[in-house]
Amino acid sequence: MKLLRSIWYSNFFIRLRSWEYWPFGVVQFPLMIYWLWLSLKARSLFFFSASNPSILLGGMFGESKYDILKRMPERLLPKTRFVRHATSRDQLLSILNEDFTFPVIFKPDIGERGFRVKRINSNTEAEEYLNSSTGDFIIQELIDLPVECGVFYTRFPDNETGKVTSLVLKEMLAVTGNGHSTLQELIFNHERAKLQWERLKITFVDRLNSIPEEDEVIELNPIGNHCLGTKFLNGNKHIDDELSASFDAISKAIGEFYFGRFDLKCASLDDLRKGRVKILEVNGCGAEPAHIYHPGFPLLKAWQTLFVHWKNLYRISTQNHKRGIPYTSTKEGIQIYRKFNEAIKGNKKAPV
Image (cartoon, rainbow, N blue to C red):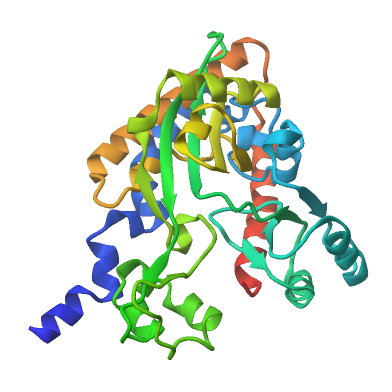
């Protein structure tokens, strides 16, 4: 029985029995076929570039996160600074010491899926991040609010108003002490944490053999990203007209933004409905309705949701095209993708 249990709870079988851990290409394959069909109908492989005309490729990939945030009202944003790759150590420390207090968040300006997003606690860690960085990055103040979520917004250009079509609530990766297990044992007894072992054994190298007190909660990762172990919970039951109206107003502040996800923090769900939020990042048409990653969410239902998602993207893009918004050419789109791919490869190779 111990052998069977060991096999069943191995990393391989944890991933196998939960599609949320499957490789991106496997889950997205049916959607790739649908994208080709929609591209044929639109006569453009990059038809989605017209979805959000104010963002490069509509936000599918390669866009500057900072350029999008600059369009937002300041009251909705954490304190944010852009740092060029060529910035010197002294310049970086000057920015930090003048404008921020530790801890802060560093993240690549062009990136995806949480790669190289890191909480920085000191000048030394900031310098290490700069030295290992392969491109421009962003500094953000750490927003200490209890609710973190992703709000997906959809508006058709022919309509005056849009609506929230997906709400995901994020539960940070954490373990709870029982008074006798070491931190390492707690990690290995937690399926989501166990999958992050290679990262966690470095982060908590000095604490792995310590024994957390009973009911002591140890946050293992402060970054709300699915690839880093965050649990995504379906919050669609909280979507209502008030929430949609709030994000209708927020989206229109960006200008020509019709389709994408706001990743944010807020004090409560009531504040979320009223638009009293701090937006950490705005993702365009390349974002997903992330509530589908709720543990146990049926794969067929997820595919159904994603097909509707792409159908909406097609409708928005073609409506904008009829208004005179051009599709990005295949040549230019491939050039942007190559540049983006190089940036992502650099992020993955750099130490976290």
